[in-house]
Length: 178
Image 1 (cartoon, rainbow, N blue to C red):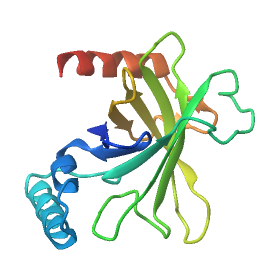
Image 2 (cartoon, rainbow, N blue to C red; image 1 turned 180 degrees about the horizontal axis):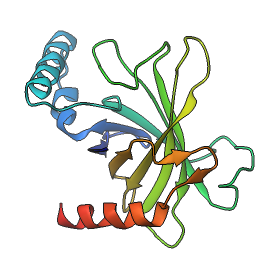
Image 3 (cartoon, one colour; image 1 turned 90 degrees about the vertical axis):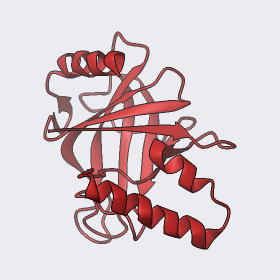
Image 4 (cartoon, helix red, strand yellow; image 1 turned 90 degrees about the horizontal axis):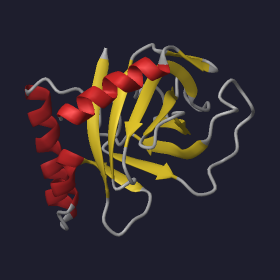
């Protein structure tokens, strides 16, 4: 299974990204009107069969990304961390236990300039830190102003990613068409 979404950098920030269809709603100044518009957007997407996996708002922390222990990826360059929280109105199969966090380290794909990858970490038990769930996420960006995100269920195992180059080639073919 593959899931695809597009996020754009929120104006006036250097780390906050919003789901592209949500960008218009996010600009509504009045909190009550914004909440109503958000509920309408969610309802519209449900009717159309769209399933959100990630929150509407993500944060890519590029500077001072927290260090990680050397693993099988220790030879690859870590470029960022993705961090996000689900709000009460958001639904997702990744929204399992409080505090409803999603995170991943973002690693450079060797031999590419605009593809990065990670594995999805989510809270499986309330009050615990996020745990890798085995889903591979590919990020496509040419300058971190907008990011294409592609999630592949079950394609990542701890400390290794099955056929990373093949998955990136597949995403590249989609990104070029789109």
